[in-house]
Picture 1 (cartoon, rainbow, N blue to C red):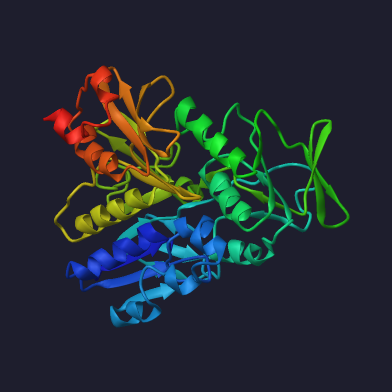
Picture 2 (tube, helix red, strand yellow; picture 1 turned 90 degrees about the horizontal axis):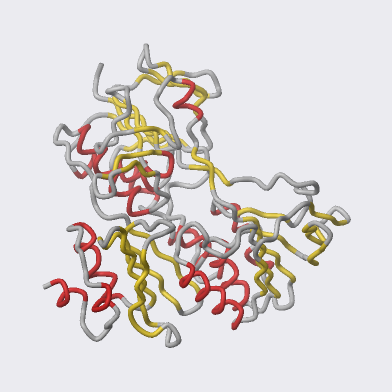
Length: 404
């Protein structure tokens, strides 16, 4: 069979595979199949600059529309794959047509987790995952609008920051005991809760949404015996990895499509990466499924290297970021509940970092308006540095000098 790469999923991971193949000299056929109407774009700005109206859709695109034609990349939008026929090395589309492949790349990403509550189909209840999602409501964020955000994770708090700056009355409902519960230390959670409170956001933790009510349009959110008035609701409670195609095809799936350090599944001709993939981490000694742009792009390059015949695994320290108000949070590594947390710098002055130690080893660093710590921490995490916790609190000494 002639070389023919089919990439299922037109997100950043899938697009990166195609880009890296062409820049690496691959001359075979490359096809990207996506179920959205847009060419590959960056998702992080959706809850920040795009929602705020400071960036339009064309600035989100990874490459201009004509890039794909110029580089002989066939991109099929509004197209869905029905199944994978591994025995025949082919995929079948929902229209019944079939396409053979020599390499199949699954970068199927994830879909929003829906809130299963009565009244969830009322007008005025939205989610945030795609350009079309945000485009449907960003112009409605006006002064005085009563906005209820369900979910106190990064997406929820980023939306809260944008909406508050636009003059909306914002309430965040979080079912867990603190915001950012799964991803930061209690000290960081309290810091962000205080920042939002100071900006006028009402945050209610340990609060579960039980129903929505209205006259065709949402008017209130019910939380047990209490109600919160709402003109609009945005739900941000995470994503579900799209693994159904892989499961039906008999690929190994466990909290994502199981791959090795080179994005290879248990089928030698099928690769997977990005939000939908579960990969091994030599650094942490476990498996991870990361919802991270850096991970998606890095794994995309690794997948392309396999197809090009010069495999290079992606093993970099995980990296994330979040912008809220004038705070730039940059994160290296993956923390866990129970890690020792050491704060460096001035939290009141909004310039500090939280260093996470596990068994004495630096495993993560969350830096707020502190790019120096963010940059220095990445190689230190990779080298499994053991700092002196007492000295680590001294922000006058750089992490680089301290390690030296």
